[in-house]
Amino acid sequence: MIRVIFTVQNSIVTGYEISGHSDFSEQGSDIVCAAVSSAAYMAANTITDVQQLDCFVTVNDGFMQLKLSANEAEKAQIVLNGLLLHLSALSEQYTDFIDLKISEV
Image (cartoon, helix red, strand yellow):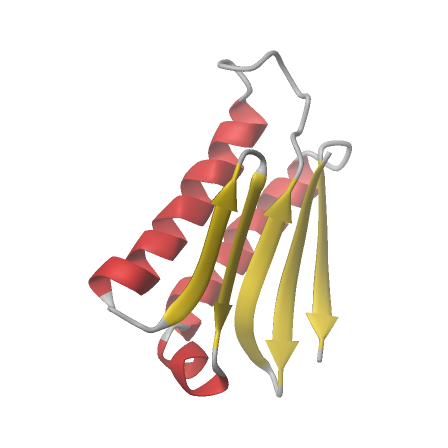
């Protein structure tokens, strides 16, 4: 199962962590994993390369984490809220394969 945790501070999304594999299908043809990975990479690339915001990003096999300071997070809200909306819809469609949580700090 893919686990997604969005971190929210004072109603502002400050980052996300995605871990695991969906096991929806075999590697290379897993549409759930591809959808989540593609959206997560697009968000991270938009924040780091297009907006050029200062953030902490870690990527390993089956793991991605992106963290922003509160100040930088405010500038990335459109991207982060778009990712949250997209992954929420996917988690509703694929309930056995994606677990999404919001962590208030």
